[in-house]
Amino acid sequence: MDLFTHFLVPFIILYFAKVKDKLAGGWGGISIDFDFFIAGVGFLIPELFIFSHRGITHSFVFGFVTAVIFLYILTRPKVQEWIGNKINRDINLKFTGKTILLAYFGVLIHLLLDYLTTGGIPLFYPFSLTKYSAYIFNYIDVFTAIIALLVIFIIYLHIDEKYKKIAMILFVVMLVFVGGIRIYEKVNTMDAMANSLSGDFTHIQTYPTEDVFIWAVVLVDPAHGQYQLYEYNSLNGKKSFQGQYNAIKIRNGSYQSGLTAIAHADKLSEVQEFRWESFYTCVDAQYRGDKWKITYFDFLGRGYTPRDLTVYVDTP
Image 1 (cartoon, rainbow, N blue to C red):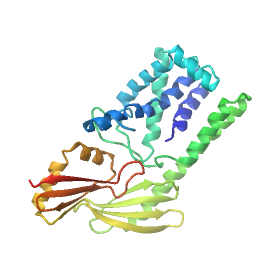
Image 2: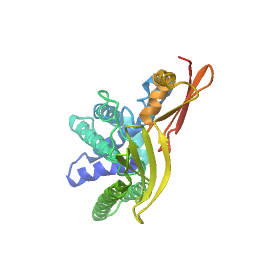
Image 3: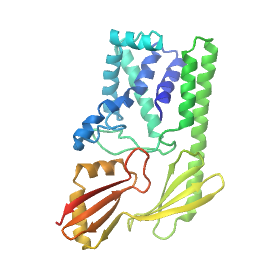
Image 4: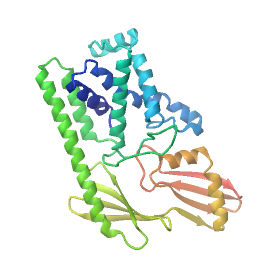
């Protein structure tokens, strides 16, 4: 989800719950998206690739740590004065046990919203690097972001409180409505594409796109490590075949030698990061006389991460 929605949802919940320090929830809701300040750690030390956007801060444990640090900085008098001058509003927040809990409430709402989007987040880090996602919304929903920004602007204005309430209620209704449509269309897509399952292709997964009615569908053959990619339009019921992919393809050299080379390459930090960021990691290993050229690629891919990575491994 976008930064505006992450601020707005916890703020609205606390507003209608008549919580005095509702701003703490809103600020907490955006705190963990300031992870770009630590992204340089992952860049300089590849083994720490968890220090990235939607990485370490997007977990229950470090989300709390981030909220505490963010709230502490935000409540410093000079920081509040600087922000207050920029937005022409008095923040007036204190660093207390109550505001820490409210900020963490905002973090939990943030994690829930990001869980609904594609890509996944490592909720249980440092105990597990596994990412979790319901794959309901696209990574960023532009329409929702624009509406959220508009509602924040209305809240900012010096207008009658009832208009602010109406704007917030309409935003929540819109968010729930769009989410409901996406859930319905996801189920509809899975039911329709289930008819395409045949032979060894026994598993199906669907992924949202920017269009509510267009879904990426992957059929999986777990026994042979094969994937079929489709695009399905749930509005008109049309599907289009995008391609078939092998989890592992080994060319020129012996199969066992190729597997050994891939095992060596998998230990590289850049490969581990690529696998962690990918939806599906396919491997193309090609023997070139004295070394293996190993290309990792994600046929589904995401806009902000590379879709392929090539490394070279000396002959095992």
